[in-house]
Length: 169
Image (cartoon, rainbow, N blue to C red; front, top):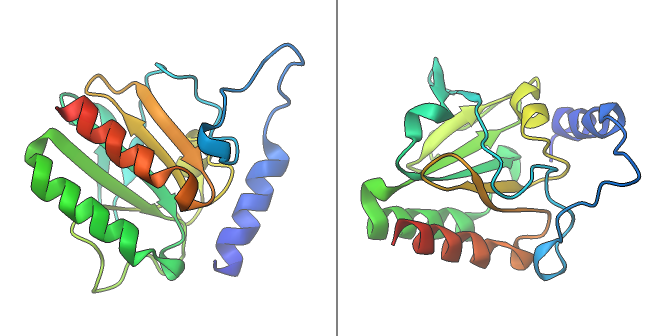
């Protein structure tokens, strides 16, 4: 992870508002680190700044299952990208994958064939309440949180794929 991305995550964690003592976070799947603090079923509206310029409003993707992954593009996961490619081939327009890089350098020429977001200042990461990398949120066709996880892939990635397949089914 780049120094800028690491610093940003530390700042985001330090600036996070305190959670009231009565609030209980959603149970973390399969022993994963706690996900972002979005409740299951919560609708997320945000604009994803794109590396190629412009923005992608998440609202424009209504009707499709959306996987949003906040990552460090300098330390990409080839296996996860291959899984996303296969998912897109299998489900076509029923699903959209958006990878959002926190790196100042962003994506390079060999970037995966998905929507490529670029958030070097961390504004979108803060909006998504991304606590660690990767943070992955699956939105249903209405833009509501269906599944989320943060941290080690082996603890949540398979469920991301299964949830997307089930919702697009």
